Image 1: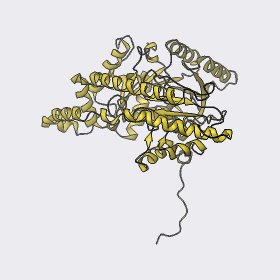
Image 2: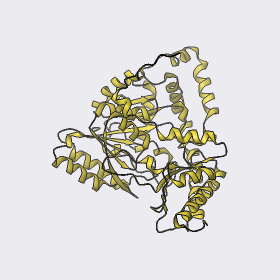
Image 3: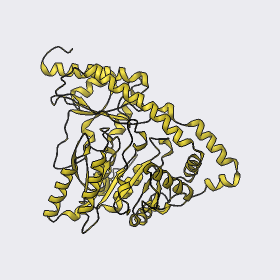
Length: 438
């Protein structure tokens, strides 16, 4: 029998860390086999490239010497051949040379998914009480990490063109006037098909954002973290150039990309393109984390990039996700198009995996609200919007929004999932108005 002992003395960091909401939502979906989950931001399982990886693995491991090297420890910064291929890939997306961007392979760091590099970047720049500026709403897994690290979140409103850069400039001016600008260490934006809204930062806003960050990087540089996880999943129009492409002296922008959405989340592979003087601090911290990401996975990715199969795979994903996005937009129009149109709206993403739905303010979409329970009863799951607003102490998260995903849902279930959701919304709205649900 265990002795009656006092609790462990958890660190302040551990005490600041709260469970990620997505873990609860995933468990709900697992526990209910008939549930249509419009919540989990996972990729379409049928697209996962098992046959391709089998071929790449066979080729890599067929040579015993090469295979054993791939199974050994690698370097903290990542496999040189892969980093060179990633730099070439990024330059190809920009239509620019490495020289024009003031980059070399030494600026590329391979990580165990983009979440790891986002966390490490924040860890090397931010002390408890420092300020990180994000969008409102923002990627909630990252803002959860900010809470854990003790950062103070200052959220900036968005519109159809992305972060309100005019409002950002006002906020930075306020920090300067109060003598607190030194506390602002980072600005974070998920600027292509944003998680959670699906909004893409417009071309003009990208240039304005970089100009504002440069203007306020006076006594101390502010790092602009560009999370481009969904960049390669844009399906409508030409993707705007990255913010990084305007940072031609490579001094302000840390570009973060991932293979999780464009190839395979199970490989846990991401990478960052960093300013020169951030490389060593990031690698020092990464060395404390893992000595370097999986060497075997990196060798497989190097084979993938050399094979020419990666762009063909991405092109297939774009075709599939465009059809699924269109199916969700059509289902929303059919099932909610006539529902209080003056107060009901949804985004039309140019790609990615997400649609942001806003309902009349009287309808509470929160986890503890009536609609969430009604949706579960109807067999459909969504991400309550309240989870997607970072812990900005100045603001209260709205409770009439939700994130919907079409990524992992089978194409033939999207309409049914939205139909169930719309039914739950109408049912709750009818009760709130004291009338029979439609």
